[in-house]
Image 1 (cartoon, rainbow, N blue to C red):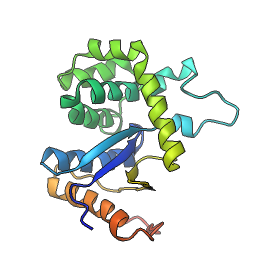
Image 2 (image 1 turned 90 degrees about the horizontal axis):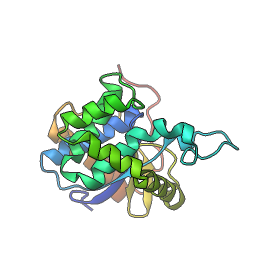
Image 3 (image 1 turned 45 degrees about the vertical axis):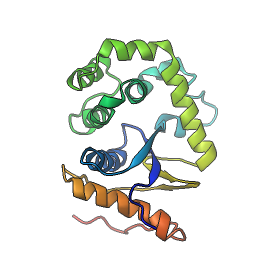
Image 4 (image 1 turned 30 degrees about the horizontal axis):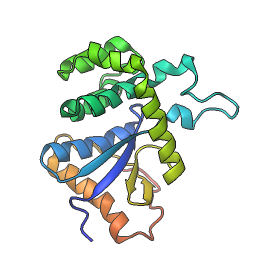
Length: 203
């Protein structure tokens, strides 16, 4: 079965470098015309890693700053979709290329301005509360329905697989599309393969 044009979901948290790698491959491919129909699924690593007995990060007002970049991403995804790919890439870049702080509202505002999205409009949406509710619902659905525990997890039909992509596309759209198609192909063509992990990382 050919994976080209296949619909799939993929989780993200802007703090994860492997999520950055996978999402850059997807974004680069889509920007060049790859026929991917992607559902972008937020996942809170803070929620996944909280200690037993601690309150949910979604209920803890002291954790709001930790969730801020993800809430901003959700606003852009749902309210400014024409700017989504660029802002999504740039929020990863803020953390992993610029060494910025994803809890810093002023740094996030800079990302939005460079992405031609009005920061005041985005932050007003964040303050309204719906992005936090959406974040929680989509996070909990991914965990409940697919057993998701990390990012990036690819969701294809009723299957889910965590995929650690080690490289970035560096603007190579063909590489981006090929990388995503290889991942999707494992779902379609080798469903019996549960885990494949190199014992060492090439230099």
